[in-house]
Image (cartoon, rainbow, N blue to C red; front, side, top):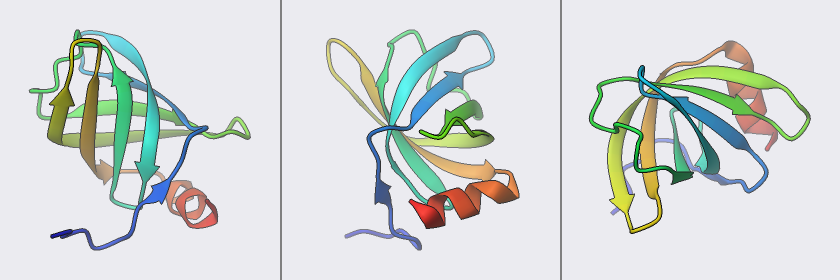
Length: 101
């Protein structure tokens, strides 16, 4: 059962730089919404157990959005992680970006 308030927009051309406070790592957004996103291709070195992750999301047009989010779920395999995040701090432009996707 999906408990999300907003639907997610599937994306494939949105890159993400994610930081756990100790390191910065590349990732790719899988889907986005006003209040959350899922990122894929996250290296195992990222500490997903921290309370807050900082994300710099880059749109295909080159616009950047600085988000702060809490990890909600993690799926791991031998090569990478996929992390689902709940956004709690985003610039106003983020909402317009999501709506236009």
